[in-house]
Image 1 (cartoon, rainbow, N blue to C red):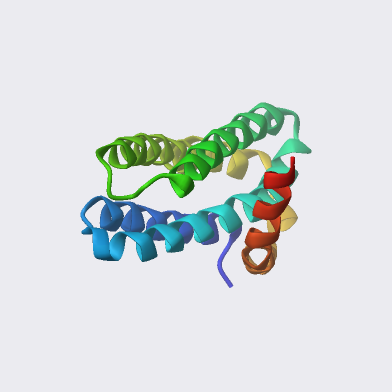
Image 2 (cartoon, rainbow, N blue to C red; image 1 turned 120 degrees about the vertical axis):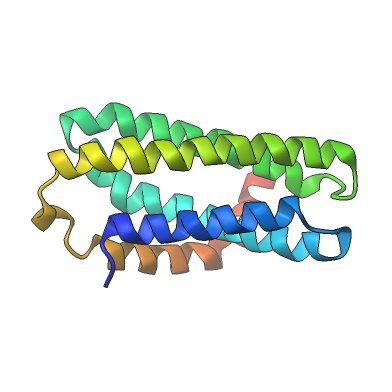
Length: 156
């Protein structure tokens, strides 16, 4: 079973590949690639917040890092929702996508190079044992809730 750090990094690697594939895709394949990316990132972020960031926020140092990352999740989510309703064949969609890709690369790099390093120094390994499994289980549950959550947000 992967550690929480490995599980998150595996997702990040998948997301990097999907970002590249979307960037280089033609119109025919873009929709499916976008949907794969959208669903995986939405479920990833929710699971990450509920497992990894909930643990970080319980530590004095982790509060600021967790809040910062959760704020970035919200900004990325807003961009993804904008892209979700735009015509994918337009130049404007690609410009907005480039912004998302840039911001998400920044977020992943920051998380892996700064947040993980500090978390490993701050949180004892025994405290996060089994969190990789919890993350993956929560992500699977979140994946099934994406459509319901979209409906709820449209009602707000």
